[in-house]
Image (cartoon, rainbow, N blue to C red; front, side, top):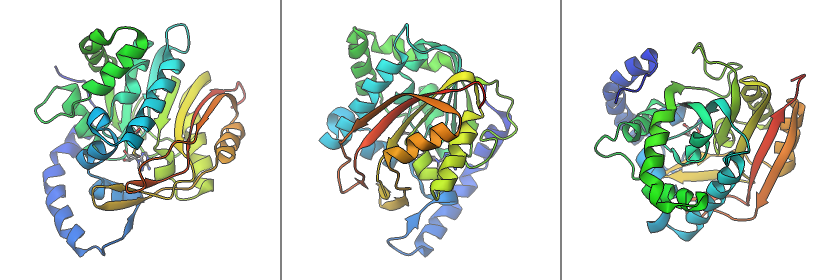
Amino acid sequence: MKLPMERAWEERVDKMGNHSRGEAERSTARMEGELYKGEDYKTEFQPQNYLKTYYAFDSGTIAENEVLKFNLNNLFETFSPGGMGGDILIDIGSGPTIYQLLSACEVFREIIMSDYTELNLREVDKWLKKEPGAYDWSPAVQYMCELEGDRSKWQEKEAWVRRTVKRLLTCDVNQPRPLGSAQVPAADCVLSLLALECACRDVDAYRAAIQNLVGLLKPGGHLVTLVALRCCEYMVGSRKFFVLSLEQETVEKALQEAGCQMLKCQYSPIKYSEAFCLNEGFCFVVARKGPGA
Ligand code: SAH
């Protein structure tokens, strides 16, 4: 299957071999215990390590499983038929994951995925094209199919995700136009899970990033986001990454300031395993862009 992909991205992927060799040299020069952030994502965030730690699901740690289940349950409620739906959903900061699309793929005509790093897009592309070494999402897909009423339909759902994802783009939430010069229609829904708190250096940047995402929506469109609250760092393999510590009120206020009406803010006190990530609870938020935003 050939995924219609942005040419610029394909060109950049071609250069990745050279890039990786440089990375090994740079990494050895780094001090141990360094906190990675910003542009470091492009060289230091290893998709396979991230997936192994946070998305092993059935075979993984209990805390990480609970987080994924909380997330899948909320996505199921949000995107079940008769609820939200439409033409275009843009997923921002997709990372190397596809679990976030398992319900949405049923109710949107077209999904655009995006991330800051080419390695993450490459990892997603591997799964979309069923390439050797692609991540096995089947436990999470089966869980979602069970929520939807028929666990045995998981292969159909995987096929449906593969058909619905039409583009993979690079993005930067800190830019007023997060998708750069890519021609993208205004979206019915913007989804961004666990990405803004990693991408933003302070609360002002977070508020600006929320506005940038709202800018991608049609009036009346929905912004759906999951935030790890009061988080300050997380591990990806042996590398520690910075996370902006956010309170639920800060998230709600940022959305209101961006002209959105809060429809849902589901808090859970669950946490990741302390060895991987320090956080205190999560909130899953659904907001609607107002007419004046
Ligand atoms: N959404 C995924 C991945 C979250 S990990 C999930 O639910 O698991 C954090 C992601 O934020 C990484 O994929 C990273 O590449 C991305 N990211 C970091 N800086 C960013 C930026 N400036 N703009 C957009 N995404 C960014």
